Every structure is written in C-alpha cells, then in structure tokens.
Image 1 (cartoon, helix red, strand yellow):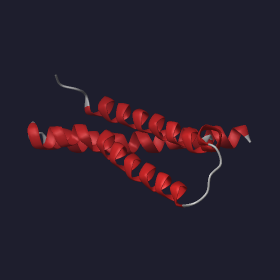
Image 2 (tube, helix red, strand yellow):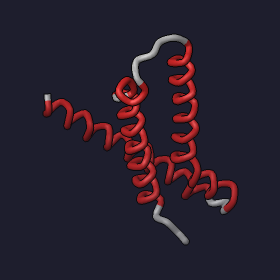
Image 3 (spheres, rainbow, N blue to C red):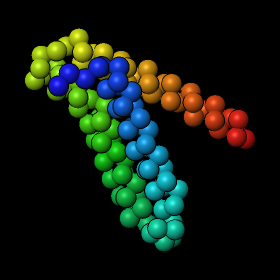
Image 4 (cartoon, rainbow, N blue to C red):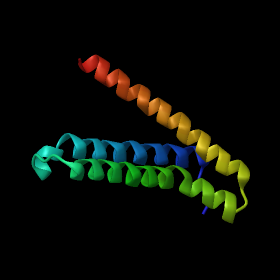
Length: 104
C-alpha cells in the first residue's frame, strides 16, 4: 500500500507530539503517581525514561522511512517522509508556542 509521504510525515509528527505530551504529563504528575522520593532511584528513573523516549521517538520518526529506504529501496519517498516530519514538527511547535503565548 502506497502512503503519501506528506501524510505519513504529518502523522508521524502528530504521534510524536502526543507521545511527548504523555511523557510530560507523567513527569508533571510523577510525585502524585509515585510519591515523593529522593536518592538514586529518581535519577535512574529519569535516565531510563530519557533513553526509552529516545528509542520510541527514533522509531516513530525513522521507522517508516527506514522501511522505505532499506526494504522498498525507495530513497526519494524516504527522504520526503523525513522532510515532511520535520516540517510538520516545526508547524506543530509553532502552534504550541502560539497557544501558550496567547494563553498567558
């Protein structure tokens, strides 16, 4: 099934922003969810969350382009999906910045 690279990139960007929002909610409400704690456990949790988030973000952003590049040998569409993801992320970031500036 052929997917439009621009739509694929936009969907990847939306999924990534939603995932980042979920991680932000987890970090924001961490004390409510896990209780107040100190020590190396917090550092290990945050670093593990960072590494896991990096892997998930890389998979969401580069998974489909890697499939196009390595399996389908469709280099042009792989690059278009990555470019569309970057442009979509920039647009979504602009929307979020505008929202938070207008809100405050």
